[in-house]
Amino acid sequence: MRYSQLFIPTVKEVPADAEVLSHQLMLRSGMIRKVASGIYMYLPLGQRCLLKVINIVREEMDRAGALEVLMPSVQPAELWQQTGRDVDYGPTLAHMTDRQDRQNVLSPTAEEVCTHVVAGELKSYKQMPFNLYQISFKFRDEFRPRFGVLRSREFIMKDAYSFDTDEESLEKSYRAMYNAYCRIFQRCGVDYVIVEAESGEMGGSGSHQFTIPCESGEDVIVYTEDSKYAANIEKAPVDPLPRLERQATSDEQPENIHTPNVGTIDAVCEFLKTKPSGMIKTLIFTTGHGTIAVLLRGDHDLNEEKLTQTLSGSKFELADEATIRKVTSAKVGFASPVGLADKVDKIIIDHAVAAMAVGVTGANKTDYHTKNVVPSRDFPLEGDNIIVADIRNAVEGDTYQGKKLLFKRGIEVGQVFKLGRKYSTKLNCKYLDEDGKEQNPLMGCYGIGINRIVASAIELGHDKDGIIWPISIAPFEVLITSVNIDDEQVAKVSEDIYSELKRKGIDVLLDDRDLRAGVKFKDADLIGIPVRITVGKKAVADGNVELKLRARQDKELIPIDSAVEKTVEIVNDLKQKLEAS
Ligand code: ATP
Ligand code: MG
Image 1 (cartoon, rainbow, N blue to C red):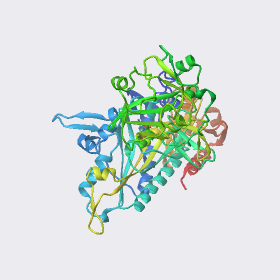
Image 2 (cartoon, rainbow, N blue to C red; image 1 turned 30 degrees about the vertical axis):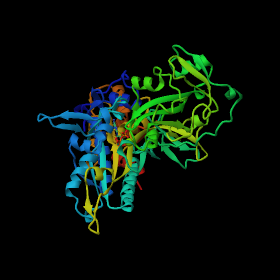
Image 3 (cartoon, helix red, strand yellow; image 1 turned 45 degrees about the horizontal axis):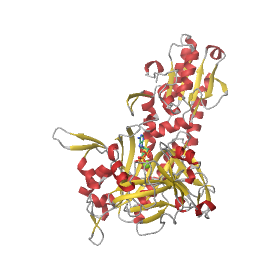
């Protein structure tokens, strides 16, 4: 393709509202433009990258035996009500009422529709196993769309749904997808790690997450120092802390201190000369089964997934002010576990709180905190409605199975789930087994974010001048920069190499614009095409062109005659390195 005929609006300045590098570079290189919050248009360069990723994903899904289908984006809300996920997804699920007043949702994923349609067709065990996939737009009204296309509201996802008769067969389907994902990320040229994950809203029994380690990632990966175990932070378990021996102060009795206008943990710590790790936070939640109190050390964060597990899957939300007043007899921010056991339906205590010798809590009295609160002495750690469990995020210093935990940030690019029978049961999807008995199939689901792969590749591959693409997903493989287009010889050499490379099936872009060389080189660095041929007057006069890789500094002069052959060799070599074994 010719640069002069392409629409590549590059920008010199770093866009003010783009926080992460991939977002900045996608805007600057003219790949995308923002249309609304979390909604982007992909311009020609961006679309070419998406298509390259899509091709790889499609090839690997087909290779793994999955069957491509296309499901609707607008889906009857009723199906989502049947699984209860209209509630689970909350405001992230976008609704659309049609002119007949029918309620629809915009698909954020497609377990419901897929299972519903399969339910209408599935009759016998003989039809299974099979796996249906699609590559399509998904819409999620994200709470905070950000980081460009990494967390957008509309994005392209490859989602697949497998149907099996027994665990062994499901395991096979799951492994096939797991392996296909490894091949996809290898071929896209992005380094990845696989970690154990929680299944979250999906439900189900097992899940792995594919994550690209990088600083700007929103996910936190936790792994043991021997690297034998890795999980995302939502899942990562921690060993209970050793129970601390009572210190001298703990013999002192609880004492209420007047703490007016000190609301935050930090303010209370400063006022009472203690550390957040010496405080006990008491959070009040409402659940479908009543009100619960959750105790955490002041420096720890609640892990919602772990709490959900502890509550056997029950949903919870922070109690409203009236409930908190009723339970604690104080305004928000002064709850204490002391005397709370009779006032709530359940108390969930994190292991780390149970291990504390003594702590500072609220006082169940507005504007008061209590010093010298001793777990077990001043509030119970055992009882019918008391659970001590692991409900917090792992932090620096924690161990799992005795091994130190280490942390790394990353971008989640894909996730695979064993769903079990959750959806097939709720959506009445059945078949007759070998004995003629009705059964619900076992399902798995498998998602990959196409746009996230593109942005992650930029997070991994860039320098101060721009993008450095892996050749497999670059918008073009080769860029020919014709430096002096008005020089007849330069123009001819450029055109010849261009048409010859095209003839050989190379994806080549010819920069034929009538612009200063400096501008063209800057754009070349910014858009990051991996292999670059520069055709300049002086070199051409000597019978040469210049060859350079975007990822390297050194340049090589090669005879015009062998330019095509050499370029094809380099392209093939770069591609070879990304081939999956
Ligand atoms: P996250 O935890 O980042 O919100 P998720 O776990 O909800 O993602 P899944 O339901 O597993 O996402 O969706 C499958 C894939 O779709 C993700 O691995 C990710 O690559 C992609 N994806 C999900 N949400 C977005 C989004 N808002 N923008 C771009 N890609 C997304
Ligand atoms: Mg996920």
